[in-house]
Image (tube, rainbow, N blue to C red; front, side, top):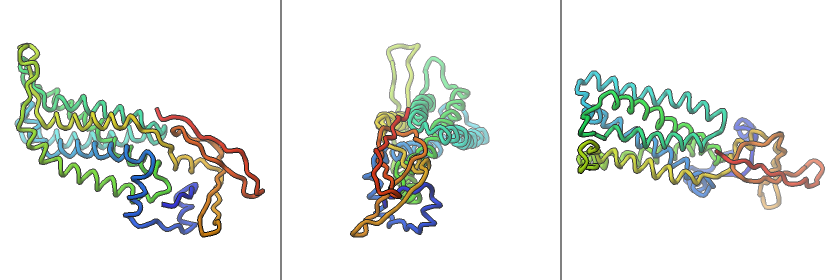
Length: 289
């Protein structure tokens, strides 16, 4: 990826910039600061939703829902909740750029809402209403993580090819979830007893839910370390961008910023090319919540 900052994708097209080969873009993306965390969050989200969707019949039967039509309705509700979450929560993040705080909130909610899908309290028995409510809540929480972090990955990796970013996330997400589905199927055959010596609190939880909860928890822990500048936001808020070529064919870019963007601590030096004089470097710094 060339490190030339344009104010928009249209400007890149007008200037005739060609994107590098896909494999080269992938190599560059993995070396880009902050890219790995939205990638992992995206993979976590698609893995959880794919596993739950693949075993929706078994999930519903655990809660005492045996009628196939009701199971189908619950599955449709889960997919619809994913869509709604992407629209409303994703729309909020698109306006506020609160990628980190919202993603962490969604991952935390995902961990909590996964537990009722595999937990059976012996004293109470099966709880179909709680199960369906948790399923719909899971769709609302886990689903938006994908579009939010697809957008974040594009933002931090700018000016890398957006197609390469999104393709890498889709390939990684679907590949890893496909590998984990058989593992989840094996884990579903195991029940783990909780507090068996306390009759009122004794319960058991299925292995596949434990697996997904651990994945979400590890992703949450890894994601807390996100701290990278939003390069596309910086470029979009620039007043003007000039690209020049130095000896040897290397391109350098000078950018005059009209406003500051909400990004993690970083700085960017700007020069005045028209006068040939250097202006003081300006820092763009603020942190993602």
